[in-house]
Image (cartoon, rainbow, N blue to C red; front, top):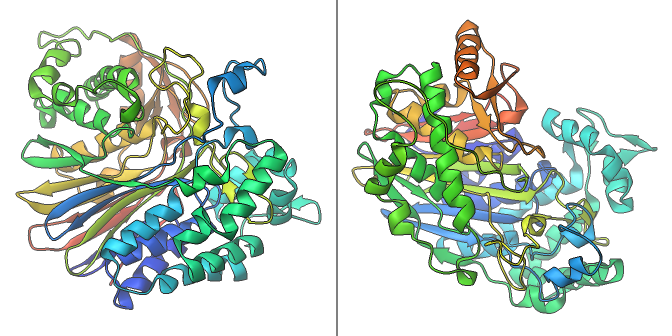
Length: 531
């Protein structure tokens, strides 16, 4: 676990971590580095993220915490009737008809750099251009998803040109070159945000989509702007926990923590059935509230956030989770539509104390699997999560942001930045954050130890909707806990000791003396780098 009193970068692919460290060593701050890392991830982790997707940034600067919601809105032509009239009960999860929200990534970079950046815009995109133009080794995670999605890749001529050679899928360690994407990035480097939302890149994307039956048009891109928002927060055992507000699902983790604060968690062994039971039942209750309310706040009645995050309401909910006298009870699960999990999270802290916790996504692995024309840009399929039920809170309407899984987190102690953390894995994001935060605060672990804890995911995972509790099987303790949970009525499924279904987490902790400790998930291809 690297440590430093200056800079720290933790990203899910080592090349992106190196980019962040390079920018910091050039004199950039954490915000400069975050833009450069985000851009690089869009090249070296194209199955998880890219400039055709969305991003959420949380920034700690001069003792102030701000969030940027970089999620895109549905196009003006995107309506329930469009799909219903075609005899569909849901929005397709792949193809051009799933790409109905404007990508917010580039706008996010521009806003973060414009407000906080120190280096030149062109410098921040140069590393990403280099890796797109010269290539890089295909990682194990990228190769896994290339194999998984091979038929989808083959069905797309532009994607086949990138990921296949002589008719065969590129292999682990092979050089992946993305010349069309490099050209798009160079245009962005020269012309800035305007190229993507008003200029040549926008025109290339919209012309391609209109030709292929898509719904996004020039007006949708021209009208897009992300927004600066105030993060939500609660105090958990003396620590202030910050999450993004809706349309992010971030508040669900805050609800879970509020519920668990009603028990002395540090007296309950972390690997015990008691711990998993308390966590899972709290998760179910928080998800019920999340699914009841989360969508674009502009399209719904006021979300009762004050009530949802109140300690009193958490105590009331907790009565349905745990009885001091013993016998476990269960909350009836509320199943919602399947959530995609292709996500990349990274954290950066610089020597001045600035911190950025950010996360970005294409929604599903390789998003819509639609590459727009000759841009090299894979568009997200985030809009496929909209419901076609007019009575559903997250029903599709033009110019609306969907329920969003992305949720970077930040923790402060006595006003000082203490931790930045987050993870890949749609439905798993709040659950893994719960594991990390309780590991740090309740069990006194380092960030590396917290990330390496045996993890679980309840419910929807990687395209599967169920009431199953999936647990990593590390040792006899795991098996014993699983057997006890099954006896209590949980539907338990044991997985490998370091299973990719649990996602990939990264984090940085800053102690009272300013020492930064960084860690990445051993389930992934990342690296924490200090300088």
